Image 1 (cartoon, rainbow, N blue to C red):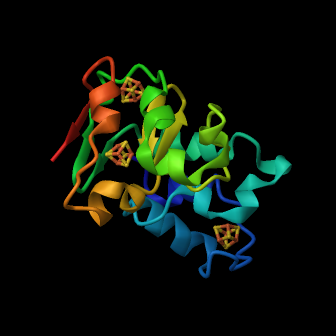
Image 2: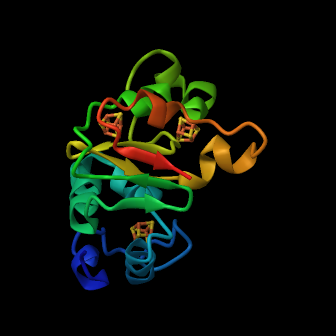
Length: 149
Ligand code: SF4
Ligand code: SF4
Ligand code: SF4
């Protein structure tokens, strides 16, 4: 797990405040996993190609979030969970077309550096439709890497 200072090396360092913070403050949120690299709009520019992936690598494959645990040792990065996700199919144009989500798409998780990584776990329909809990990602995972609770 990287420190905020190490993560800051892979942020633009311009303090443009488009995220509402300075780059150093944003790095702190990354460490706390209260923000995702994708939340920095500047990193989506071509000049920063590969930086989002590098930040995910520094943050590590730990993909644990409330209500969902993904074992990085079992995950083979196949992306089936990303393709089958109920939220993605309802809200992500690329997923609806059978494509992988773009880095700019708002998604629950996507595959980064060969491992599925949670980006916006709060979007998971399990959290908003408690009466009918979705299990699709866990049910379709071929390696039983996903545990929902
Ligand atoms: S949007 Fe990105 S570049 Fe701008 S302050 Fe936030 S982290 Fe830094
Ligand atoms: S379906 Fe399972 S093995 Fe495939 S990317 Fe998702 S968690 Fe990993
Ligand atoms: S439980 Fe359903 S909505 Fe939540 S991440 Fe898995 S497939 Fe997507």
